[in-house]
Image 1: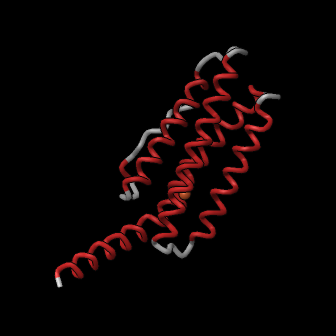
Image 2: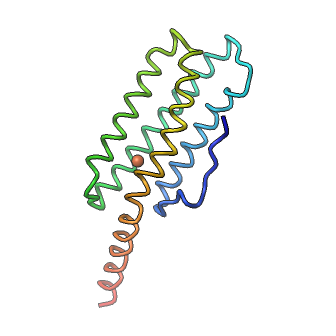
Image 3: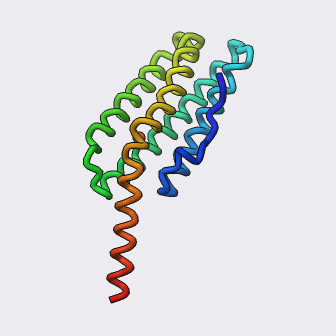
Length: 149
Ligand SMILES: [Fe+2]
């Protein structure tokens, strides 16, 4: 499966969101590395750790993104958070049964996580991006005009 490559189209233009998303891509790419390799039984401990790191990167990114959406009063935050929760639950479920069937879980999860991330960015994150950009601009602009007075 091909690696995730960051595109400028993915930029939300809120630096921390973009940086955390890039970190998430790196975590995902580390996870994807095992897809091409012939996996041996002893690799599965390592893969389990990479999955744990990836799930931590997901948690941090979501927490931060939700904080920003709350700060700017994004009206559709409820639905967005629900999407996040569903995904986190799915990753936790993968992690829970990973030790029992690592090979199967790896195969199922690597595809699922990769597809989900790209789709979530394109469908959900891109929906809030213009809203946040406008709010950010208005905030900065009104702060400037207050200072100018
Ligand atoms: Fe999101």
